Image (cartoon, rainbow, N blue to C red):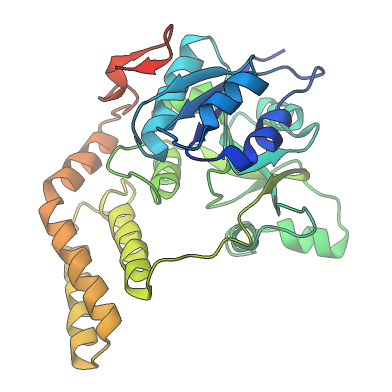
Length: 320
């Protein structure tokens, strides 16, 4: 049996602890579970320790962000001899048989670096809203049409994107692609990682007939429209600037954003103008970091062994 390590990054996620970690207890398919807590203040790590003593708990003492915390867990998983790493969101849980089927599929299709199940809402009564976008004919040819027509389903469907709420990543993929880029604190790190997976010649797939539940459907955003636009624009621009599959011409992409700013100014789109100007300033200040990030990807840099993870003691489970 292949060795699988599950990594769950937690941050003030006590409400999901029992469902998330409880779903990973399967005597028919035992896995190593690593929880990386990003400095929770709501008792999440204590709850994990008390209810799930088998989980290796790592406390970072501060919020490293989604990607860096996962990198920490990936390092520990690989050091422990994992053949596959399953990244699972703290607000998600797996149905029985999902992990074993993912591994079975990955073993049959080694050209896929990442495979993911079907993502349902928390109640499980319908697909996750964003997953419907990821599984569209444009992004995942054949999946929806095969389901609707009743045709024989394939074992795996190639897709251009599926979010990192439930990724089974092969050791070979991690060795080729490395870890998450620290230029992304939260949001955009999965887009960037998949760009790098494709750059390394591997595929990403969705496996039908197996499921996770992602409990995010009813959550409402409390940020303003300008803040939301800023977050979205910053993510998309950064992902573009560091994408190894695109020409190394950051000036072209910065120029497009500048033209957008002028259009917003001419048509008095105040909210879009405010968000675009703010993002432009951030991109300009960080332009060297983005250039270094892209060069690192082109030369095959791992990102797994960058600070702050160098201070992690696997034995103590603490970031010093």
